[in-house]
Length: 470
Image (cartoon, rainbow, N blue to C red; front, side):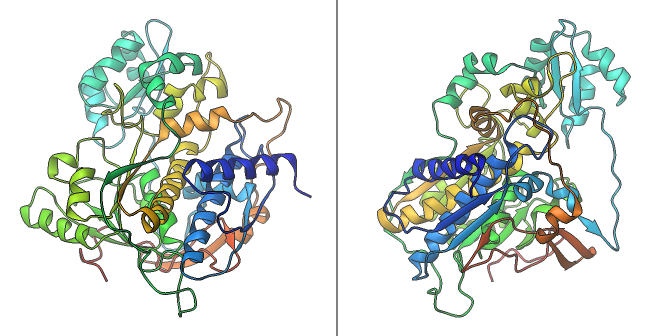
C-alpha cells in the first residue's frame, strides 16, 4: 500500500508533467514511488522531490518509447535511492585511483560587519578574485576578519560587479520580495519557450521492435556544461540512450571526481572557441544535433555566435537547454552561481539551520534536481516537436528549483532521518571499467520495465574523443 508521502510524490510527478503539456489522455504507464522522507537530515522533502523529478523523467522517456511503437511501461522510483543520487559523487569507489580533497576557505559562510551572513564561493577562477577584493590570504581566519569589515549587501554587490561569486544569506520572505525572487516566481520550474518555426520532426532512430532500440536512440546531444546540474542533465539523457558528446574548452579547470560522476554514457572532446576552426567545428556539430545543452552564464555563448536564437537558425528544430543559478531574467540573471549560493539566496539555508549558525542542506539538492528537470524539459520538448514542429528553448535554474522544493510540505519536526547504509542502496550500485581503473558507483535510479536505464559508455577523461558524431 502506498504511503501518503509516496502518493504526494506521485502527484508532484504528475504536476510537473502536466505543466509541460503532457495531457491526461497520454499513454498510461504504471508508476510506483516507494519510501518517504526524511532520508537526509533536513525537513525539506529532498528525496521525494528528487524521486518526483526522476519519475517524471522516466515517464517522459516512456512516452518517447511509445512514440517508437513500444508498450507502456512500469516505472518504479525509490525515495532513498533518489536521495542518495543527490550526493552521487560520494558513492564513487576507485580501485586504482585517488584524488586529493582540498578544503577551500573561500567557499563558506562568513558573518559581515552588519551581522548578516554572506556565502563566498571561490570555485575555479573566483578564488583569486575573492581574495583580491578582500585583500587577504586564503585562510579562514583572515577571510573572516576581512569580511567583518564589510556590510553583507555591499560585499555582495561588489563581488557581482567584479564577476565573482558570492551571495548574502536571505530568508524566504526576503527572497520573495527581492526583484530576482519576483522574476523567478513568475515562471514555472521548467520553462519550454518557442525559439522559431520548423517542420514537425519525429524522434530519430529505430522503432521499438528493432534491435537495440531505446527511448532516445539516435538523439544527438551536445553537452556544453560543467559541475553539476548541466552534466547531470545530459547524463540523464544518456541513460535513456542518447548519443551525448560532452564539449569542453581545454583552458577551463575541472574537478575530476565530478567529471567521473556526471560523464558516464558520454564521449568527451575539446573545442577552443577562441580558435576560428573550432568555432566552425562546433557549428558543424550543431547542424547535426537534436539537443544543445549549455550551462554558461547568460550571454557567454551568445558572444561566440551560439545564442539560442542563432542555434535555431543554424539547426531548425533544435532543442536548446539553458541551465544557470539565478534564472534567465531579472537583475541576477547574468551572475555566476553555484549550489551553495542558490541555497543561500532563496532562504533554504536559513530555514535549514537558522540564523545563528546557518548551514547548507547537506546534499547538492538543487544541482542534481535541476539536472533532472532540464532533462525532463528536453524530452518533453522533443515530444512537442513531433506534434507541433518548431525549435524550443528549455530553461531551468538552481534558484527556481530551490523555490519549488521549498513550496512543498516539510517532514514532521520530530521525524528522524533514515540515512543511508550499504544494504539500502546496494541494488543501485554498479561496476564500470574506466580510464581510472575499476570503479563502483551509483547507477541510474529509475526502474523501467521495457527499457531499463543504463549507460553504454564509462566516463571518459576530458578531451579523449574526437569532436565528431559517431
